[in-house]
Picture 1 (cartoon, rainbow, N blue to C red):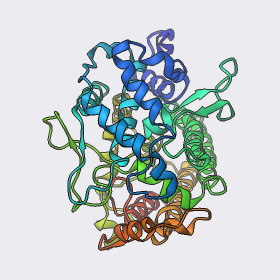
Picture 2: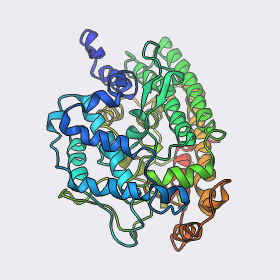
Picture 3: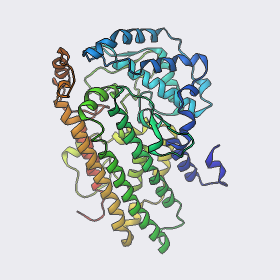
Picture 4: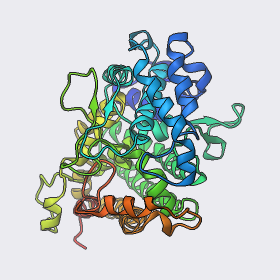
Length: 452
């Protein structure tokens, strides 16, 4: 049942809010069971290959003893895929959950395929048409990127432990892992916990946009209450981000988990990108999954009027480093969100009343608004610290620095390949990570009404 249709002629914005909140978590339960999604015989080969890949493939650049033991299976697994028929996804388009499952399975298969390949030097990895064509087709139907995304690794990558119990982080189990490590499971769980907490942010945004006016005492009181509530929610999300530290080892994340996420442009513009065989479109969105693809966080930025593109004159003036950042990153990341999420964000962006403008003209709201912005800045400070530890610092280590990792010639070769002449540390989508994160933090700070 479409819950939004239960309400009598609900406003468009409220329908979008309900549908997005349900799409994030609640209504996804029926789609998560791997055995019930692509049950048609012709599509079972996707599911079978997906199930077979778990725990049996290793990173192509890994020459450890455990990885070498998996190499023969990996070669056989990859060799079978170009022999598959190129399946039409149109029969799947009538059911949203099945279409989402198809995107998730195909996107994971592409990452398993590309990253389990032996190092290819300066040659572009070629994704066989049996994966590339249906992934491109189902992605166009769903309205987002034909590659592994945040939705595939977090939003759609879980099931209820006990279907009789309500949805909660304690009642969710992560379904799919690249590395098979508990560290990867905890990493996804932390992201899911943050998203689940963030659904309340959508309710606050919806409540604001349905206020009959913003000048009456009751409305001002409600806005102030909700902005303080928003600060508390953001702080909770920040705490959740920090909670990943004791459960996900930075070495394991950087060397065993993160390489599976890397997209076509992860190593920078000078590295050859992926080729999708049989897909005519030249400029595909093929960056890897990123927290920057969280619809909740984008909605929060839009609601608080954070100016990531530096299009407004605000204090303090952007630094040269801020100006050098990828100012279109957040906007580009929307193309990696499911189409319904993008539609929701467009409606949030089109709201006639900016909460920042209302707070600026209403002295009683300024402290509450600034409190919410400062909470978001603290969250981005937390994100910078985590990124520094998990990516920037770890980029200067070797796999052998992790306890228990077998020593081999792979260590020196892999370390040299990662460090030699590649310049700045990059995110999974190829962006200069430190500059990008600091630019986001500084753009948030500039939204504050009272100079600090």
